[in-house]
Image (cartoon, rainbow, N blue to C red; front, side, top):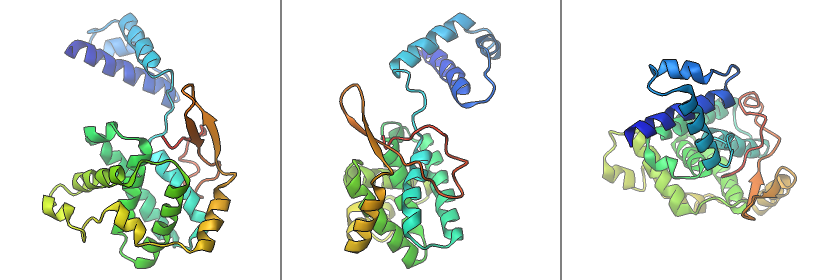
Amino acid sequence: DQSKFQLLTIAALYSSVKVHERVALSSDLFSEICLRSYTAEEIEAMERTLLNGLSWRCNAPTAHQVGLSILSLILPYVDIPEVTWGFLMDEMKYLTELAVQEYFFSTQRASTTALAAIFNVVNDTSTKEPREAIGAFLRVIMECFDFDDSEQITAARRRLHFLAKPDTEEDEIIDEESLESLEEFVQTITASNSSSSHLKRGLEGHFCYERDELDHEQVVSPSSSLRDISSEKQDSSLHFC
């Protein structure tokens, strides 16, 4: 039903403004914006339906926020120039925002999109040392937490690569040299035992675990953050969902 879908879209925007913006807009104003196609009561009723469907979980972390949280875990353990970190954060943000254009990514966990973006950016890094250092610790992080399997992340990487570079031929995307699989990527990058153990010990205490109503264990993100991105992260706890 096109009319109901349009009403749902308006209610979603109405609710998002109340959650994320400093100034909330009234349902009456939204009704006027849509030329009274829907009344304020209809918008509010649809908002309640939407929130009930989401179990009132209105602050789910975005892929960008999850990506920042993952990068914040790596920062203390690698010696990489600030300009490289700036490039990684900017490109990761660009790719996670670009992902909203593709329906496929709406069906994926935010952490899957975040990891796909980070791996693609790291893979495009021209210098070998940052690529190997960051990749090694990403591998350790993936071993520590319950992310999607490598096949799903690789599929997301391919989609994201094609979305960012639409002129790329399909055979170029599949080609190992242009976009190697995640499995091969992480296997070719080995972290030393001491570095891996050090990182794993460092991760303890950064995360705590909560169980939802279905008794699923969820990982709450660290309170620590990148020096230059703390202001960008919201004060709510992030989950690798």
